[in-house]
Length: 136
Image (cartoon, rainbow, N blue to C red; front, side, top):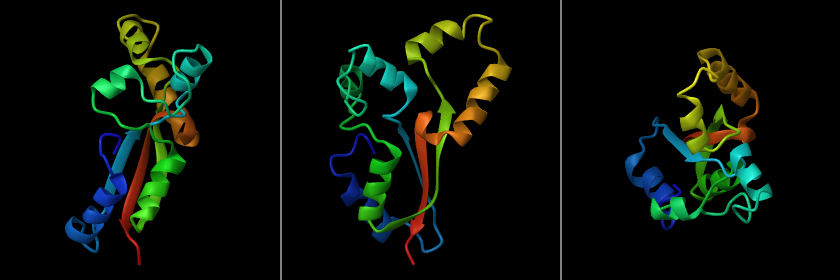
């Protein structure tokens, strides 16, 4: 979704042309409110949570979603949100995770704890998730 010029038009096309009446659409996007991004704002690395970084732009990102802005686009396409949640709490940047994963500092138990914490705090997860279907 963060790569699409007009996500609402695409979502409408998915709803009207590709999604069966009993079908489900799974949407997963990076989360603008992830703590790693909020910390980057406080450090002056990016101007605001939803800013598109240079690296993201180089990968084709046009926007950075929050749960409410992703849900706004889904609703504008007349799709129904069945479930909304976050995927994995992440306070560090990806390069920091890469460095730590090569040490014994990050354990499987810690990773599981981050996952469970994210389930109860979706707005603080690295990625956001919506499960959608056609509206009745």
